[in-house]
Length: 230
Image (cartoon, rainbow, N blue to C red):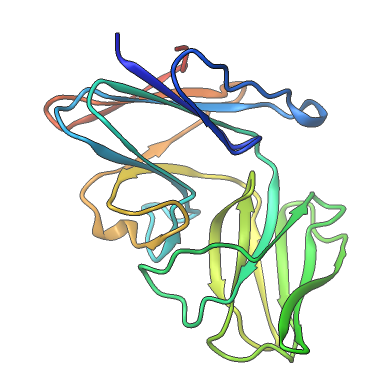
C-alpha cells in the first residue's frame, strides 16, 4: 500500500495516513481536490500554481508545493476563496519567497477592491470596498515607495499572483482561476518562472467537476484523470 499524505488549505493542516482532511464547505462553496500519485522511482516536488497565461509565462508564486516520495499519494484540497496580500519583498524576482505580512479575505463583488498605503513606516490595506464582479483590484496610492513591497491576490490563504507595488498604480486580477502543475525545486510561495521548466501541465476542472488525479509515471510522463478518490 502506498503511503498517503493529506493537505487541506481550508485549515492549512497536513496529516499522515488514516486521518481525514475534512472540512465543511463555507457557505456552500465546493471543495476541490487534487490527488498526486508519484509512481516514479525518485522524490519529486509537486507544484500547483495559477496563471491566466496560456502557456504560463513570467514569474508566479508556487501556490502549493510539497516534496513527495516514491509510491506516495498526496491529497490536496481547498476551497476557491480569494484573498488580498502584500509583503515587504524588496525588488520582486525569482527565488524570493512571498510570505504575506497581511492577508485580507476578498469576495466578489462586495469586497473586491482595496487600497495599499504606506505611513509611519508600515504598509497596510485600507478602504476595502465593492468593485467589479469579474475581477479583483488593488490600487497603490501615492505613498508607496519604489521597489520595497509586492502585492497580489491569493486563494485559500496562499498567494497565486503577485506584482511589484509602485505609487499610483492599480492592478486588476482576473477572478477566473486557471490551475497548472509542474515539478520544481521550490518551496511554497517561492517566485519562479514556469516557462523555464520542461513539464507544465494544465489542470482543467470541467463544470461540476471538483476532483482530478495527476500521476507521474515511471517513464516521466504525466497523466491527468477525472476524480481523486483515495
